[in-house]
Image (cartoon, rainbow, N blue to C red; front, side, top):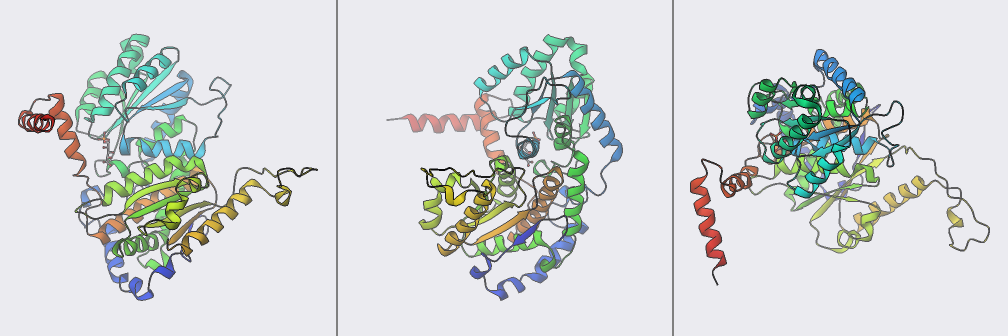
Length: 454
Ligand code: PA5
């Protein structure tokens, strides 16, 4: 496959019988047609399927202009959002930025992107506000529903700071709102205040929205090539537009993880060997966890970074309960060319490695670990990514979205809703005394009082 990724199944297939795969083929094909015809469960939220193909070029131009304006005016862009309105942009930034970025003051430098509204830590917000007081900043608040507590709370503080610093008019040109095209409190607030807005298509749910202005605007501000991100997604669309699982890596991955689920595996462990992929695995966890964890079903999506975690969790993976399988994200071409030098006295005994690149040693660790874990009864799939670039970020996002939809449908759940998330929200509103939650509040308080009784 050229310009795509490859999925290697050698260390996973021995755990599966051939007929288990072939028997599911007709179902995979049927789901594929349902997905492309947008006729399955949750079909109101299938806008992401052909989004990269039909990307609105006018909107893209507006988005790039706004990003250029932020670059002119600000040292910092604060992005307030949570879940699907946060993780995708963070994943791309961490994956594609240098580990030790140069300061933001240099000529041509892009603004620093700082995230907020993705938790309720008062300490974080207080320290962020103090940090921003000394900086030139712009804000991008992102919420599809427009009413998410974490995001709304942070935005109220950030907006106030912007208005104090730049005045109401000045703040107006520094605040960008990404939300539903028509509904929600944030849409109303933005229209009332006259902020520039970007639309999250009504038929694209939060965790499937990174290839909309949700991800693309902050990434354009940070200087990432959003055209390349979309080009990668288009290629992934093309590669996954065939119904036959044998010709479609996204479906092969979905099929195998489904079979492991049926065989009693409880956890899929996403394994990386590059620390910059940490937030990509966070994005992936949300995508699969929220899409599949329903009706008592679903694999628990977890992630580790090797070789670091081989020194903490390696023992469990090798010898613990056989509830896991692994999916390794292997980056083929590294950005580095660090070669281990030879030393005359070889006191540390490393001369046998002299002349070899660090990433070559990393690749050997990957190989050795796959063999060891396979021997320990852990199936391993390997997803090979040619390099870490904007193009492959876009490719991977679309690849996993497609695989997740297939996987959720195979499991028999709606991969596009998240009813379980509502429970905590309702309790929070009740505990905080929101109007309309009086009855629930009464029940909760009675329960808490009972628990406190000696
Ligand atoms: O995938 C989802 O729909 C959720 O994770 C949302 O992205 C998250 O809850 C944030 O919601 P909102 O964008 O409405 O603030």
